[in-house]
Length: 123
Image 1 (cartoon, rainbow, N blue to C red):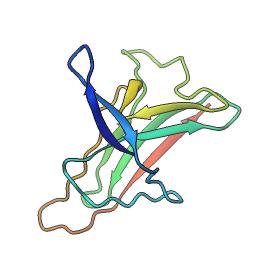
Image 2 (image 1 turned 90 degrees about the vertical axis):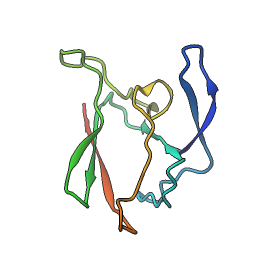
Image 3 (image 1 turned 180 degrees about the horizontal axis):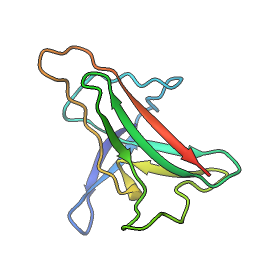
Image 4 (image 1 turned 90 degrees about the horizontal axis):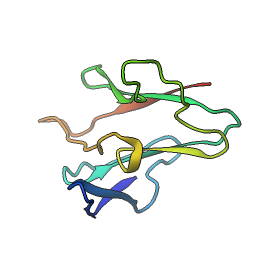
């Protein structure tokens, strides 16, 4: 989802909320790069099991793999599931998910970039 700035909270942080249509079209998100636009992802668990989520971004330009979302652990294994069963959700890049919003920038002399976000879900 594209995010819009809805002001500043009491701690001086930007309040970002989704706006517009869902950009996911059958598992593909096609973005025309605009360095002023922030993006977020909402993951919804429609299964009957509580799930733990890790997500990584695979960059096809330099073959890097970067964590996209890691559950907070504070030095110990996570014990609470990230996504509760039957509709539990996690906003990544906005809201209470704890991750920064995403911005996409093309490298110099590059007209097209392709990357993948890989979700790892375990029960």
